[in-house]
Amino acid sequence: MSYTHPGQDDTVFVKVYLPTDTWNGRFQMVGGGGWQAGLYLPSIMGMTAAVGQGYSTISTDAGLGSQIYPTDWALLSPGNVNLYLLENLASVSLNDASVIGKAVTASFYGEAPKYSYFTGCSQGGRQGLMLAQRYPDAFDGIASSAPAINWSEFFMGDTWPSFFMNSLGEYPPSCEISAIQDALLDACDGLDGLVDGIISDPNKCLFDPMSVVGQTFNCSDFGTEREISSVAATIVQATFQFSGAKKTDNSSLWFGPNKGAILSGTTTDPSMIPTICSTNGTCTAGNFDFASDWLKYFILKNASFDFSQMTHAEYEQAFHMGVQQYTSIIGTNDPDLSEYKARGGKILGYHGLADSLIPTNGTLHYYDAVTALDSNVHDFYRMFLAPGLRHCFGGDGPYPDETFDSMRKWVEEGIAPDTLNATSVDTATVINRPLCPYPKLQYFNGTGDGTTPKGFYCA
Ligand SMILES: [Ca+2]
Image (cartoon, rainbow, N blue to C red; front, side):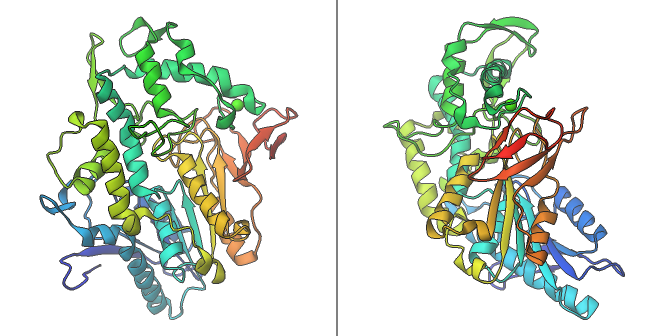
């Protein structure tokens, strides 16, 4: 079904799925991902799973259509952002969907849902926190993982490696970046007590990419042996944790991904250091439109902006403009969750320590800000750190598959989860490990074999 906000020239589509005779008395809204508010394939899969478990469920497209990028809707004309649609994406359509979903549920079954829940990761994780911040009455419980909060900061931060390469005029091949990452993993894997290919405490990793300059490696991209260059090491160093986007005076603008995050890409988790190489081994700048579209269309409002020519002063200025213009619309980092706490709401989520797309430290920065206002934050909001997990899913670390059910149990039975189970997805041997709620981290005392929870503890 569709609806409009009269005068705003929008058409918002929502879909509601209702189990005919297996309704469990509960309502669940499924969030979106990337630039999509919902109703894309993963949302539909989430709705299908929810309806299979007896939930009535809804998802919304926020009136944006089904495009992967905002290219078609971002600008009304050069210089003029479609703010109504941005607000639909940011917040308005979320509350709409909760109202519509609950009303359709009540009219179909003749009674209102006993409990209402929201679930999402990335864009969906941001949506969950926006609902808690701005529409505290909408949901009893929210599963919010790897949230795309600090929206303008993290998008600008994601463009930093590309900007940095442009400023050097150097574009190392992904095999070289991978070789540095492999050396980092060798150096830091065991610091958490277990050599398993997963870095569970990135802060302990003091690996310096410059230390492997000159080492040879086999480049799978070209089938040749190469040496790690100081340029590639400099780029990796500039991308990682404690570095990240910088001002012209070298002070920090935003967090980089943790050491151990994979900087070379996959289809669902694009390369942080995008380069395009020909078979003879020469490379040029690749694209990371997912992030640079924010800069181009929303901050600079210029569809033909040439990112490759940007100066450092312009980068710093654009970073500031983005925060200034959009934080109140879509920043989603208001740390005052007192109204949500007061209505008895619970928020539970995870963030992968190997997330390169949305830096884990941005989420922890927010969590710290919430904690500064309410030292009892643990009573209603817990964020579990997932070692080796990339953005929302994927990577060598196990996946927290019981996030939603733990949240529901917390809401309905008052059982707060002290750990969150995670199960490996693609590994030959299935491993199960307990994730720890921030500020605790997961460590291993050496008593098990690493495939079962035995030997893991939170500290
Ligand atoms: Ca390890």
